[in-house]
Image 1 (cartoon, rainbow, N blue to C red):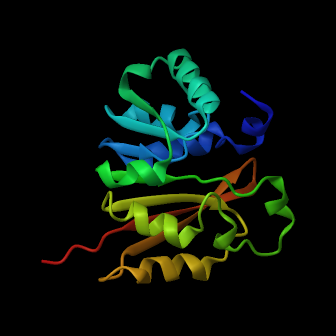
Image 2: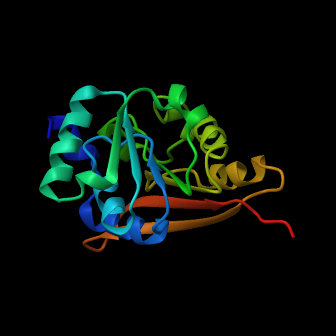
Image 3: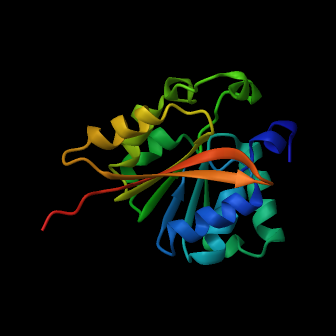
Length: 184
């Protein structure tokens, strides 16, 4: 892994939990980085699509998938998620976009406009066209009312569950699970 990946990869225990929550369908990991989440998804699912714009990160992710013996369950795509998105369909879209480096932890409140490469509203809009379930892995200090706003953007509004992720007794991150409301 490169230096950035050491502080940006999802801790393995949290990634395992995400995999349980995301289920066994086709999971699209839009900003896979070195593959921490994609590997855990592949341990529970037969099909994972792992996308990253950085060819070096994809190479690291492929090597890590070999180590964990799940490489045959992951399709790695070197490319820009936003360019690929119109051709994607899956059961779950997992978004763990860059938070802007370690300085996010110094902020009292993290505004989703700081997410990279696009703000949280745009990310959700694109992801909601791909799957009926969208999962966002976010900083622990994210403004929770913005997550509610996201769920209300859709018509009809999507269900939202917000989960605090603790590691070693400390709040590490927030995971937001959005589910498309079914109408009967």
